[in-house]
Length: 313
Image (cartoon, rainbow, N blue to C red):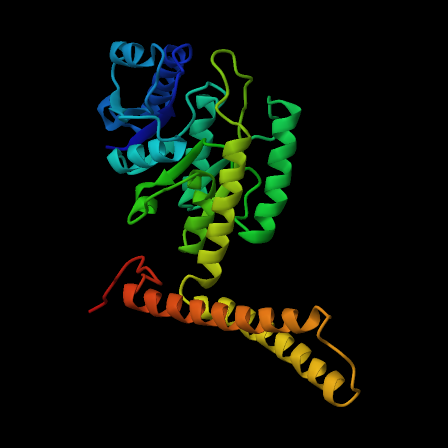
């Protein structure tokens, strides 16, 4: 198998036939260019518990592999299921809403080979979305570059080309599909980016809302913590605990000096309580970091990957 096209979908009945047709045209083009047979390609449609006519329409398409999730589990779960089922040496992901233009796929594959990359991400420079969606994406981009630095402009674009090796040992959760480039960059894979065509939605409704935005932000914080401190949580928690303890201890010493040296009353002041709180907080955070460090050491996470092995004799 040469290329697997992975398409997550939820209630996209109005788009599926046209999308399948456009993907078949891309397959024909790639077959001629790379001297492949049509059987070297597969289209994997992952139905994320659709409630409309999508399941019936999927069964009418040919050729296609259909994965049906038992319930609506989200785009990340649907992509993860598709990636695990993919048999191609290259994996192409794209949305089912027809906003990702399949005609951009050959250009992404060309860049992957020409620049010897592991992943090429689409960049929707000319987006056909609402102003609110663009504004949220702009803010998320700046926050993302500060926290996780994934080195791409558009983490929300599903249109990407991966080498299959990218997904070895990877399981996606939450809204993590946006941060796949960051995860792969940290693992040492080479990431590229290319402007792609973007179209306005014609059929169906957008699945993006404020709830997904909040989940994405929380996942971003989780990634930041695990990237920085997953193998050494005591460095962060311990530092925070020590700083809190020192500040609280310093306030406590000053309160004792005021009481016994300057003979000032401190019984009605808030600072003694602040000092006790900071000291106890510092001790608790430090112990929590120590426990987390012990748990991580017993879990023994994989801190590196061997890309290849070669021996000259």
